[in-house]
Amino acid sequence: MPHSKVVTTERLWWKECNVYQIYPASFLDTNGDGIGDLRGIIEKLDYLQELGVYKSPQVDMGYDISDYKDIDPIYGTLKDADDLIAELGKRDMKLMMDLVVNHTSDQHPWFLESRSSRENPKRDWYFWKKGRVDEKGNQLPPTNWSRTLDTSKSAWEWDEKTGEYYLSIFSAGQPDLNWENTDVREAVHDIIRFWLDRGVRGYRMDVIDHISKDQSFQDAEQKIPGQYCQPGEAFFANGPRLTEYLQEIRKVLNEYDTITVGEMPFINDEDEIIRTVGLQGPLNMVFLFQLLNVDNQPGRTKWSYSEWDATDMKRIHERTQRLMIDRDGWNAIFCENHDSPRSLTRFGDDSDEWRDYAAKMLCTKHCTLGGTSYIYQGQELGMRNLPAHWQPSEYKDVESQSYWKFASAEFVNKHRKIEYARKMMELKARDHTRSPMQWDASPNAGFCKAGVQPWMRVNDDYPRINVRDQSESDHSVLAHWKNCLKLRSANKDVFIYGGFEILDPNNRDVVAYTRFSKHETWVTVTNFTGKHLLYSGIGDIEVEWVLGNYPLNVHKRGESLNLRPWEGIIGNEVIPN
Ligand code: TEU
Ligand code: CA
Image 1 (cartoon, rainbow, N blue to C red):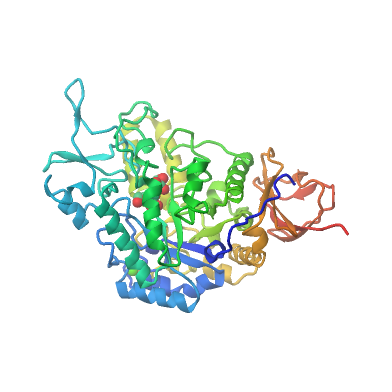
Image 2 (image 1 turned 60 degrees about the vertical axis):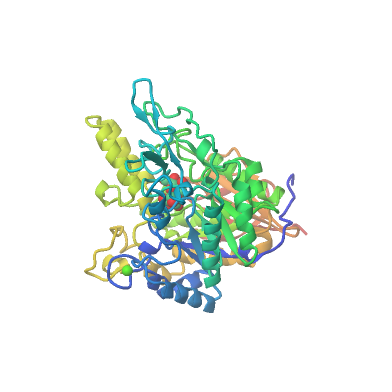
């Protein structure tokens, strides 16, 4: 084999654990207000333990925090958080929290002070700038950067009282903190310590690649035709001091035993990735978004679609798997989160005929890739996107709402464009992964009591797709996840620390690869089509199939493999004697 290298770095618990991401608002409501809460998470810990995972709730629903040292009352109290940590401890599970410190809420006391006057000592905790005036005398914001959650608008918000703009990349309610200011960084370190001292064992660091910004504040290049505001990530992300800031955080983390993952939407350069997650790197791993962007049109916003096939997927896996093995980094494996559509709908087939097969096939791939595994709530059931016939008013996310408002106004009487926008909501909205968790077939899917109005509508398919049903069967998607995770844990040398080699890279229908240790080789083959295929990519090895989503196939040395629609199989190489 050309690449015979396996992982040589240290074996550590945070590499071997399985993380389960909870969206607390949609997990389980226990006090009848229709919003999930911390008590709801405590109630379901046995379910998570049976799945074989640790957990990672995001404790703030809006990503706009007004008090970093308390729990939002809609979710519970600090005591609930302490109880959750204690209950986790009893089960040998750990709590990872979201750390949202690129920005605060505009209601945070720091920002309230900052905006109160130009002379306020906290003025410099955020980015305040004067506007510009164009040739025609029109007022313009300091740069042409667009808002991430509303791309038709400026990332700068005008403040009447003090006559300056403040930078707020995501929404007006989320002003960006100025990390150039040492006091800001110290305040963040203090927050990090606060939760670790309470027993939290690690962090998912929200948009952490945004914390260092190019201080020249230049206009972004014109990429999107016909509008003033342009994506400004070349300037507001991956700035020159990113590694320095992260190393300062690392010093704090070193006082504890933690797991850390950086959410980095705009990191792509291999040297930059390794600088962050390599041996001397400040973070354990980062979420890289190439896979989740595979169906975006290059250079466009997420509200666009382009066809992809298995070659794209293999290219992405090959690159990140090899990168971490060759350069001592570490991967975070995920294909779904609270900002994405459901992976089953996106990468598989969610029709009633094939959903079961496709969800298990995706699971097969997920569980045999190297790195730390992250499952998002409901993924283990094969939950699907919201039904296509739902009206845009059912979409609660601020990003979807802004987009729909923009599209409706911009495209009046342009029916094809409106239809396209609708289609994009159906495919890409963040709401698809935010609908309530489906526990059983009772009203409201068991997420909240019958008669209570859940904060977001429950997917219509809950009578057929729910935890109760799938727990009772050995052949459900949930059972398949348990089996695959078990296989992964039982073969850490191969699946977690092993080498990686893509098979048949140019095949457009099948993603297949080998994983190997010094002593054995395993093969994963996944059919990304609804067709029967004759697959010859395995080459001249004999494989004994161990786990799959169909009755197991036989495969003899040198023969082609009959793959059934959405088949996903894991096998072990038979060494000739
Ligand atoms: O998301 C950061 C981010 O840049 C994207 O994932 C973005 O939300 C997506 O592309 C929009 O479609 C994080 C959080 O995960 C997200 O929920 C927050 O809205 C955002 O940061 C702001 O805190
Ligand atoms: Ca509640």
